[in-house]
Length: 92
Length: 301
Image (cartoon, rainbow over all chains, first blue to last red; front, side, top):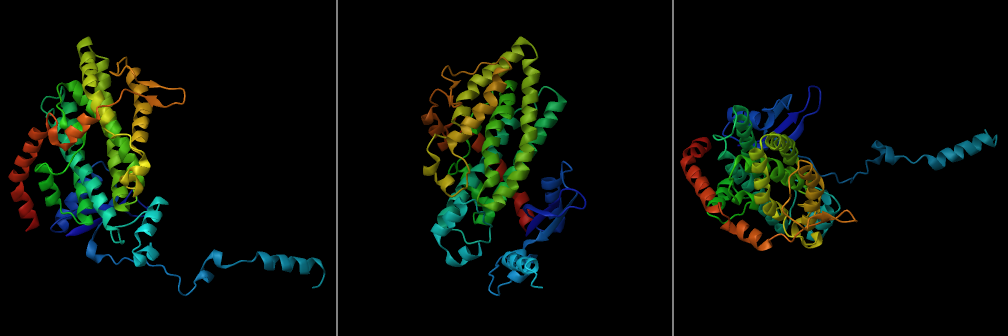
């Protein structure tokens, strides 16, 4: 079995993908991962995840135009300029 | 990468990696890229595994308990690197058993410096300091490798190599501050190791012609790496009162290091399996591969 190894540098930080180990079961995977990613105390914690348990999402086609969810979806410059001009010309 | 995955377009892929893009195991990879990756990464793994042998020979002969322990720890680190690296090769499609079989049969290559003997404790110091220094220059450049899983494991490898260089420097400093005989051990070892060190980064082909650079597997050219090594380490060697056995070695006015032409024939001979220790060390690996077969079989069962 292939286990993906995620390691945490210090408590409270996010886990980051570090590599993978091959082992017949979780117990062996833990022994391998401890040796590979923890023997100098460099990791606060490890996550071992069987590769087939990972569902990867990597396709971000923007088919539905989701720009309204992002800051780059809003261009206010021209409208702001117009609003300021109106206000200063006393039209309001 | 989404667009590339659908297009399977080699030119688009090349442009993507040359623009600094990185790819994952699950992305579509051109066949040639995959083949080059396997060749390069496998040789790196082989070098880690073969690189422990010259040092292993000295564990029992190391001068103090502290040095024996440090050397043992280093050997464990390097074998660990080989394991991490073969894992990456496996994910690219070449099983570890096949890598090991190709290594012991002499079909696969490993770095030139691991084909040479270690005559004295001075050699161990020079290997641990300067060979590791040359290696870490190549390895640091791999942190930017276009193949992201390889780049990620390089973080751990480079981190451990930094201990190794310090360990090597400590061995050297202990010797050069010791007796006249101890100083001479280092000087003689430096004379033996300088030619292989100058060959280590390979012949100075323009990086544009180097397929490993074109695919951005490597992020720098051979000569760039050698210049970096000379710039960083020549001053550190000279300040200890050691002499470098190359009368042509000098830093010119443009800050470029000039040196006597390394023996590229020797490099070719050595890496194709004709080094002074090649056969002996491969025989050692073969013996252990066979002897430990049952362990791998039990684990795989």
